[in-house]
Image (cartoon, rainbow over all chains, first blue to last red; front, top):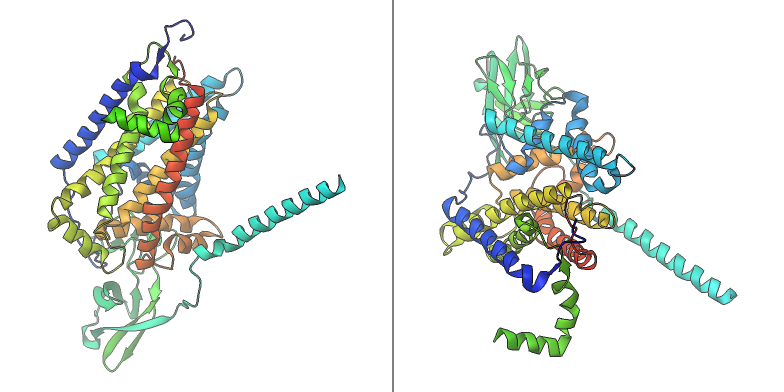
Length: 127
Length: 143
Length: 216
């Protein structure tokens, strides 16, 4: 543990590393932006056939919507996403009691894999 | 101590009034006002261009945008279907190969009468009112 | 030069004393690159704020003028396309960095008391960042933006009872229209960034008070 490990100060020991990391982040953003600029989409047209796709970080919810027909729709639109968000926010309270870490690990792994799988399905099938 | 209790009570009530006032202002976010929804009849195609059988997609301008609707003749019935999918509001397309309406968003499918035959939609496609006047076909839009 | 400015600031505001705890705080001797992810996320946030400020100089939040203003920005304004691209990419990287930062904190059990409030502040910030992505998606007012928002706001319709009201609240009317655009613009450029700044301020102050967790 860190208790007996030699302690260092944020400044001057680590601040330079953080600044380098920040610089790398900025350069990664700018490089991606220059290499892959966005295009101007077509203007709004209510008559043309169109399949809207959300941004990649909402693909999981887009895929989730397909599984709940009719009056079950609320599970895909509100209940499951809300459950997911709330269990993420209240993670410190899932990790309570002697087997707390096991519970929170289980929740964390379920959250992570379901998000990953739901995102990958539309990416791989291209729908 | 009585005066102090009274002041504390006064302060608490002042906070309560303020809190209630904030809650009472929330409907501000909801536009409200007198935006009454009416049905507007919009001129579309010539009466002679109505489909004799099957589905015809018509486009018409309304409030600065071009809208579309489906005029359907099934046996002797004539009706107009709104293209808005009852699932989450995407615009459905007529698939003349399978004789069905397909929603591109989440895979909803409707038959020629607008009834759900597959996918997530909870309700059939909405039937829009229409009138035929002076040889033209008018479709009623609720807005 | 920089030293002189810092000394001046210190004389006026006592900046050195106020930040001594933050800068000189002790950290565990062995920490890895993954501890930089939060800082990288904040950097991406700053880039998106800066480019957002630049975009707001040309963007017109109105149902009739939003799309033309984006076309002008993209095609005619010098480097307009670049600012737009950097804004978009800063959002992508922001979400990636925040997600990785959350995974790092989770694996190191750093969400445990006394840091539970800081985890929740960060998680709420993540939700707000996603909301910013959703509201920002509408602003170009093109085909993709319009239909994604039709679907996204229709989702509220499935709530039993209150669905109709919720959808109208989100859209500012019965349909996705100019009123929706203005509403989303307000959320995207005022409400959400302001909320995020409050959250980050809380987040960083708690880091200062509690130090960072020793890891595994």
